[in-house]
Length: 337
Image (cartoon, rainbow, N blue to C red):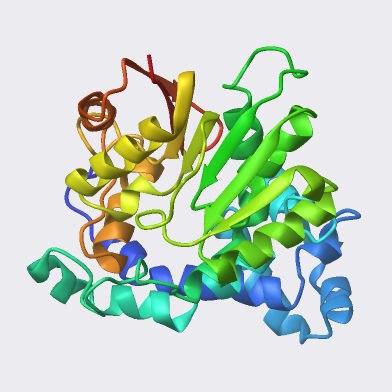
């Protein structure tokens, strides 16, 4: 409640949230942010650069200034630090390519059917949702989301520690874009990486490994993480953004497979959306549970206490929690013995 009494502001801000989505999508489509990379400009200059109407650009840029994507001074618009980093094509962290994936009709439809998912307790679009075997959505994910994972990958690899000359054997489970294993290979020149995922997804991971120049130390193990032999033994098993798709018994099964694949002294390193025990903080982390309700049959955003139990039941001796600011994700390092 506001200091002056009840207000419908939150209702209108939320029910009109699609307007914010489409405004951002439009700005990316006409490349508005990239045309501001060299400094502040007026709507007239931006309209010419974007090949759009002055009125259209002015209204769109004003809206983007209101919601925080641009800063306006007088009649000139400028990038914010976040916008410059993530929404200009000149930046290696450019996220414009993720829009097509995040707004793909199959994912949007999951939220259109959210009332049914709430009643059912899981996605209403199919029996398994996005975790169905060889779902093409993960190829799109692998191609679209790697820029967003650059910082988490660097932070996660920092948890391995030790001399960079050590000859690590690493398994990247559900490798997707492959960025986590590739980042290990770049940080540890003597490491050998095995990427496990469906065959069509590993095509993307292999492309990225070649681009990074680590393909000679990057092996592919195609198949399901539940049915394929993981091989090993490994010094490190990476479990990145995988557990949240499943229920707790299935997560325990995955953790058990990770322990069995590790050499003595090995560690499993997990990257996840791990809310606090209240399950509503940190907000950007905790809201991920809704994504799992809409898109999976039994997935969730689990707390550290739940992960601690999952890994302990699977036979791990100790589990450490690591926040990874400024990202909205967290990590767990689990020690085999």
